[in-house]
Structures are given as C-alpha cells and as structure tokens.
Image (cartoon, rainbow over all chains, first blue to last red):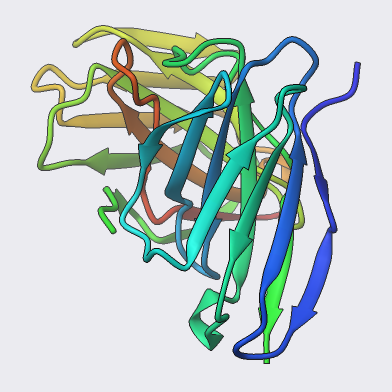
Length: 115
Length: 113
C-alpha cells in the first residue's frame, strides 16, 4: 500500500514568490495535517484538515493557507516567501480527526529552499 | 512555537551500550509519542503511551509515561549501528478536534561501530 506521498520532494524559490505543496494521504485516511521542520528543530504544527474542513491552526502567519479536496488530498500554500520559510514541510495523515498516535503517518516531506 | 524540552541534544555511544533520553513539558498531555527520523525521511512512530505511569516496550525500545503527565523517557538497549538517527518525543491531547503534536527538539544518536 502507498504511504503518504508529497510533491515535489525538493523546491527552490525566490523571496516574495508563492509556493504550493501537495500531499496525498494513505487510502482511507480522512485527516491531513501539515508541519514545518526547520533544520535542527522538531516539526511545528501548521494546519489540520478533516473532511475538507480546517480543524486546527498553529501559530503561523496568514501567508500560510491550506485546503483539502474531496479525495482527501491537500495543498499547502505559502505567499510572499521569506528566507525563514526554508524548511522541510511534512504532511501526516490519519484515519480519524483526533487520532491516537498510531495510524498518524508522516510523508517524507518537501524540502523548500528560499533564496 | 512551543517545543518540548528534550535531552540530551546528542549522544555518541559504543555499539552494545544502552541509551536513555527524556522529554519534559510545562503542559500536561494525555498521550506521549516517540518518533525516529532518518535523513531525508519523515518521522516514524516507535512507541505510543496513553496512561500516566505506563511502561511500554517495542523490541529493544522501552518508553515510560511520567506520573505527572509532563514527562516521558525512552531507553534503547544494546544499541546497534542502525539505531543512528534523530529521536523526537511528542505530546498530544487526543479526543478533541485537534490532534496536533507538540514535538521536542530531538536527540541525535550516533553509534560507533
């Protein structure tokens, strides 16, 4: 079975540009969450979506937005990129909204570099 | 953003040695999770703990949920080269609308062959 797939795997953007990252959850998983992992740090929660509705938002500026589609895939959008947005962006999917830890599976991430 | 206090930041040990790391929080969690992350990959769940005082094993890994619900410990026995990687603790409060995880900063484990 396919795991959580993210695209692209690597991306280089210029300051001020916009970026869209994509995530396909495990088949049957209805919840998708996004995390930002800066080099040398643990992942930081950005968004959670369940059944196409936003269920949680971390402490990130409005330049960050996301959505979930009817097939439960998701996009993370970041506008007006800053150098500090350079990070590994992780997507995680789970079968349910809350989750218990098990079944909460991470993808390999998208490495975004802003120059 | 909030991150849990995880220590040590890094460890360099001989193969066959036991390893201990811990994680503390100023907040109470009802779930503690331990992940391992290899280079270029996302975190992979090792152990999940759901009850204060709970002690759970997964092969050579043993983790405990602290009585105060503000800390957790992970032990690796008889380390081997493939244990190399970064270990993260994470706290979570499930049951509500948010299942988001609060991570520690990680413990980088390096093993001498």
